[in-house]
Structure formats: C-alpha cells, structure tokens
Length: 100
Image (cartoon, rainbow, N blue to C red; front, side):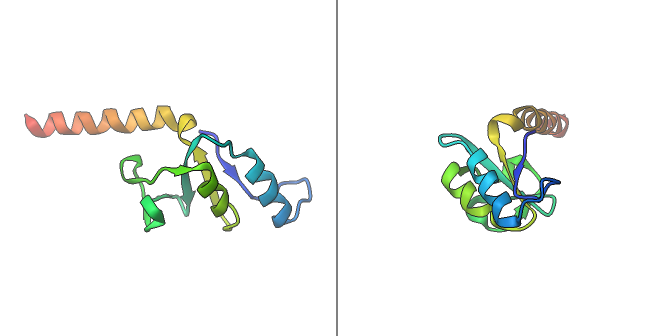
C-alpha cells in the first residue's frame, strides 16, 4: 500500500516543504483513503475506523487539503486493492460461518 505523507525525511525539508511535495504526489482523478493515528477517516472526516468498509473515500482535492495535518497520510484506493479484497473475503467467511 503506497502512502503519501508530509513526514520530514532526511532531505532536510521543513514541514511546509514536505507538505508541498506530498500534495504534488496526489493525482487528480484518483480516489484516496485518509489515515491518521492508525485508523481511517470515516466519511466526511467524522471520526476514525479500523476497517475499509467503514472508511470514507476522498477525491484528490480533499486529500490534498488534509495533508497539512501532522501525522496524516493519504492512500490511493488503487494501491490498497489487495488489502480491501482481503477484508471483503474475511467478511464473506464470517457471514458464511454465521449462516451455518
């Protein structure tokens, strides 16, 4: 899963410079998940959750606007596809077990 964050790396960037670099990495037309404190933003940034099923999906403009928040990362939905599919499979197994 490819995360885009404004963390300061060894390049000696200020936080403002790191935010600028991170914002340029966000691609228009792509959809993003937003992560902070080990959880995902819910829709409309109304709290945090731990599952993709409950997570909000944000357009590039909105994702860019959150990058100035310390400790926040944005993740392209396309790069989280395997993890999302794994979660779906686990939920399907749980549903099947409950039906038995």
